[in-house]
Structure formats: C-alpha cells, structure tokens
Length: 554
Image (tube, rainbow, N blue to C red):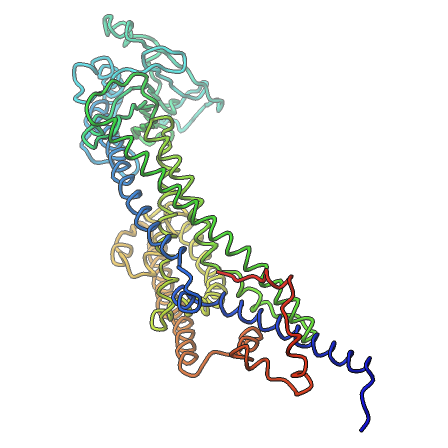
C-alpha cells in the first residue's frame, strides 16, 4: 500500500478543517436566522429568553391609553369652553340672532335701518358688557394696548349709480376707513359718535363694515377636574358683508380663542398636588416609551447586521444575490411602527407636561401627537395576534392586496376627479353640496357609500330645466359607475387576495431563497454528517474566537 506524503495528509486535514469551519459558520447563521424569525413564545421555549419587549409593549398600551383618556377629557373642556363662549358672544353682539346660523354666516339684514341698528347694537353691547354678560369675561387690550373696539368700513373710492337710467359710474379702487372707540368715548352721549360722518354709509358703494375687539376670560371648570385654570384671549370680529350688493347684507361673527399663561394664580386645595401626580405619570410614560424605543432600535440594528451576514454568505456560496423580497424580510415593519409611535408619544407627553404647568397652550398639536401614537400602538397589537394562523389572515390579505388596490385607486381616482370638477362647475350655482370643490368631493364620497342619496337628488333647484336634466344624468351615471362597477371590482381585488392566502395556508406558501436556506438542515448534527475523510479531523473542530460574537437577534 502506498502511504500519503506528510504534506499531502496535512493539506487534506487543512481542507477538511476549512470545510468544517465553513459548515459551522453556516449552521450558526442558520440558527441565528431561525431565532430571529421566532415569535416571543418560541424564543422563550428555545432559549428561555424572557420576552421583555412584549411585556413592555403591553405595559405601554395601558399607560398610553390612560394618558390619552385623561388628556382627552381635559381637551373636551377646552373645546366646550371655546364653543360655548362663541355662541354666547353671538347672542350678546348680534341683534336678532336666533341661535341658528344661516348657511355659513350667522344672520342677515335687508334694509338700511336694520343695518344701522345692528352696527350700533354691537357697539352698545360691548360698552355694557360687564353689566350683561354671564361669563367670566372682561375687556382685553388691542395691538396698541388700548381697551376698546375698532370699526372699519371698506368701500369703492367714489361713484354714482342711477338704476332707472341703467347707468353706473364707479371708481374701482377700494378705500378703508377706520375709527377707534374706547370706553371713554362710548361712555359719553351715544348720539355724539352715532352722528359722526363715519357712520354715514353709502350702501351702493359699501363693501363691508368690520367691528373687531378683544375680550379676556378664565375657564374655571378645569378646577372641578383638579387642574389649573386656563386664561383665554378672544379676538372677535363682526363683519357686515355687502360685496354682492344684492339687497342682503350677510353678518359673519368670528371668534378666535387663544390660550395664554395666567399672570397670577393663587389656588388653594388639592389642585397643585394632583398636578404633580399627573406630571409624574407623564414622566413615567416617557421612560417606558424611551425604553421601548431603545429596544426596538437595537433589534433593527441587529437585524441589519444579520442581513449583511446572510447576503455575504449567500453570495459566496451560491454566487448570486438575494432577491429584494428576502432582503426586506429582515426589516420588521412592526418595529418601525413602534419607533414612530414612541417618538410621537415622547414629544406629545413633553407638550402635555408643558400644558399641564401652563407654559404652553398648543392643545391641537399635542392632541394630534398623542392621538396618532395611540392609534399606532393599538394597530401594533395586530402583530401579536398574527402569531396565530386564524388571526393572521387579515395582515396577509392586506399585504397581498395593497399593491393592486393602490394601482386600482389611481385609475378610479382619475374618473372621480373628473366627476368632481364637472359637478362643481355645472351644479355649484344650483346645489349647496356642490358650491366648492371640497364639498363636491365629500358629497360624491358619501354617495359612493350610499349616504344621503335622496336628499342630493331632491335639493337640486329646478330653475333651469337643462341643468336639472343634466343633474339626473350626472348623479345616475356616477352612482351606477362607482357603486355597481368600481366598488365591486375593488371588493373583488381584496376577495381574490383573501382566497389566495387561504389556499396558501392550506397547501403551503411559495418557498423563497431565505426559507429554502432555513429548511436545508434541521439540526447541527445532521449538518455534521460528512464523508469519512472529514471524520478524521473531528478533533480539530473548534469555533474560532471571532465566532463567539455571532449575532443572536431578538
């Protein structure tokens, strides 16, 4: 028998060791990949790793929801106070206000006497405010730090009109004249300022009269909720609109309420202590969200490293790149969702704490942040339901149907926009729901969902037979097209994706490169069943020191 040269035996052993070392790395990568794609329960059974992120997410759901409910109740008080004050101001300053706005304006007048009386009534009511108001309101300073109201009239520069002769001479430049009436001027004989030449109005060239003034108020109902009260500044504007010159002057009342920091608060009782408890709770929410943010960010970083290892290994072994679908499997969208939610909750909680101590008063921004973050938190619960096959159908169906639905909506949107523009230009002068593009879009969307159909048909004015006939053709064609055809196709796309997912769940999903790789070997022992030439070098099997830091992604 011929004997192997010592160098040849050494080379064979070296090749066997290199081959085994490659197998060890491959099996280690496979184990890490399997562990990464396990759910928390499987990870606990595999390595007894406590699912910290799962417990933290459950705690966060309870904390964030509790915080949102408390803030929502507080925000309701703010909105209610603003709306109730606006209604009270309309009753106080608008003569003959009935409690119901006419279309998008408050009320209207139809003769000169009523126009004068409405203007003077608003000014007199402002002067008598302290004696007639039931609310906690008082006078506020304007931009010049003066207490009073400002009356401005806007009119064409000059002109003359003779309807009998059907002639009109008008200078189209617009002039604006203003007068300032402080409390001292109003306290004098009212006939002095009423007889001023400023209040001699030439209605044929008058465009509008605007009365503006500021009031201040304090919302005391927050004390009942054991919160510090808010101080408000109401910028009120009464506009007498005569731009149409149709014989009808529309009266608009606008009240812009801003919350300001109260200059001096001296409240005894349990309000201050309750505020400290709420601030401590908000701080704890921030800590919980910050911990969740760090853990999820860490998981994404480790997943990216694991993907880099897999891409490098796949390229070296199979000499080809991994498909994009498999690469995206490493980017857990739920972690991204949680990170966005945590960031919004942290920022919203900081704003809430500032609002609580009355340093800032931006309720709207805080509401958007906390509301959206809570929405994302509860949407994230679907992830844990997705671990069960029966509940995972919704997520898989949405993922499969979303691209087709988006492409379908893009095509249907072109038809929808066409109907929107057509309805606005043709039916706008004859139908209240078609007066503006946004209202047309809202009306058509309601029709698609079967809402308010008869009212839309019935409210069209029959002043023009041609327009009336067009409206019938327009509405019937839109409803038939979108409800019977487009909406049915939209549902069919989702149903088709649902049927496909159900078949996959019964017969198995198509295997990707990543799944094929994970299925190759089920255990390290099977992967180590090699030829007899390698068995002689089993004693040389050692994991390199650099392999001790292989990533185990959680």
